[in-house]
Image (cartoon, rainbow, N blue to C red; front, side, top):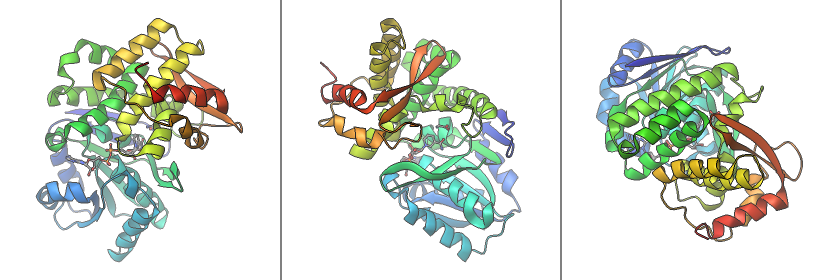
Length: 351
Ligand code: NAD
Ligand code: GLY
């Protein structure tokens, strides 16, 4: 098992990655008052694991899925916390994918202005990315993650035992954030390219997840609240990805990140941010996770969602993080009409 420390200013955070992490969670939480937040799918699969690992804990299950990442679920969690008479030293345990992690994290930040928080991520995406670094949020009025807070979990326990029940779609979803990290961090990029055939092998995915957490930990330590700009790099592919996710739903977050990176690699190439050869290299890495980019009829309509992206600073411009060269990225703000013309490439990506 690997231990990764985040020396973050607000509160240090420790991530444990590997087989046995859930047993470590059990030891860490023994004797503490725990409040487990999960979702309906995870509860169905892991009810026994939850009761054996956290005996006596209150359990609150929200309906599964991104469309329930909203204020109703958030307030349902807060209501249940109040009903359970939690106090500030109680521990909220977010046991689920990124949706549960983001909402339970926000509830922990809000309740009595902050209770203790532990993350037990159960999807590949959550183990690779969302459980680490303290971003918490819900979607609101068609804007992704617009209500949120930075709130570091004191511990994150990433146990690969949860991978065994993940459907292929959720593995592909996690690969989205893994490929994103591979574009930003040459060490992860090389691991992906040198092990193309093992990208669905659960023990290799566990190694990749730990490598992604090591990279994210370095970024978050340096720019915990995305003020200096470094943390923005983690948004690669997300401007377009989030806009499509809000407009079309259906696919997973990670798939939209892959599709967003595909389009944004074309933008980087055509805007002269990177060479055509490097853009092709990025697309070949994307293809390892998502061999065919689907068509999105009316894709230019996603502009209205991209205009609401948190990175935008000017009126009528869309800001995005683009691949520049190996291990480097650049931020670019495009006028809305120019960005909409690029979005139209998604109407027929095979062209
Ligand atoms: P998710 O939480 O919706 O989980 C995906 C599906 O898998 C759900 O149906 C869930 O019930 C199910 N599931 C969870 N664990 C399972 C298991 N072990 N076996 C079988 N099924 C299981 O989605 P996700 O992909 O984990 O997370 C996406 C969310 O994370 C998005 O809302 C995104 O905005 C957010 N996110 C946050 C950050 C951050 O830094 N906070 C980073 C990336 C993504
Ligand atoms: N997933 C983006 C971030 O954590 O900043």
